[in-house]
Amino acid sequence: MKTIRPKSPRLRLDSKSYSELHRQVLERDGWRCQVCGSMQNLQVHHLKFRSQSGGDVEQNLITLCVACHEQVHGG
Ligand SMILES: [Zn+2]
Ligand SMILES: [Zn+2]
Image (cartoon, rainbow, N blue to C red):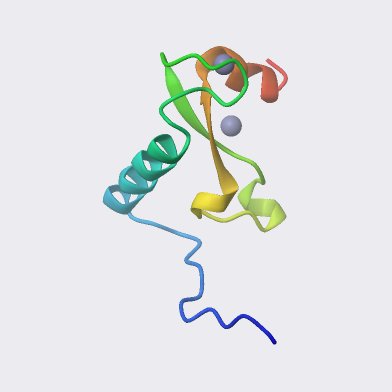
């Protein structure tokens, strides 16, 4: 049996929805960096870039601190 999704995922969000989404991701991850567990300087990282069909959906986002986020991006 197939799962039917009533809402198609929206790829673009306005800034209010976007910050709301960020808060949801932070709460889901317990306000901790998912790499090192830091609770400071948290940012939200896209697991897939939009160009690789990763959209602005909670499943595509993860909480990282600034340091780990920079490492993910090869900084
Ligand atoms: Zn970290
Ligand atoms: Zn990122």
